[in-house]
Length: 107
Image (cartoon, rainbow, N blue to C red):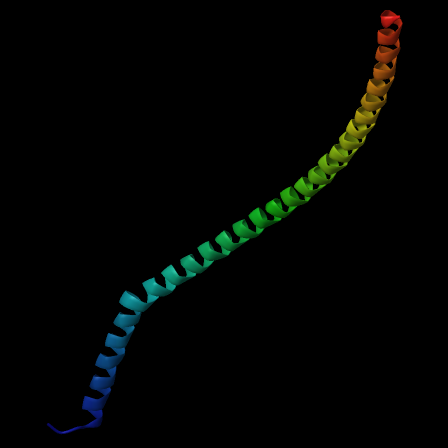
């Protein structure tokens, strides 16, 4: 077999045809799938960003609610302390009255 210009051009045509077929049959669908996957992943990333933003807003709201609850608890503690001191002084007054009443009955 002699290599001639005509044979080389035929070989080049055959190889070009084979490469073109490989590109059309194998590579093009993979590239299309890759583009679809990239677009889907972009959509998923965008959804995740939105969800993270919503979580951030929810966390900020919860922080405000927690601060309000802590303030309310502090107020309730102050009221309980006042009620306990009032009850304590009332007990002392009742004890003195009881002792006076007991002493008057004894006489």
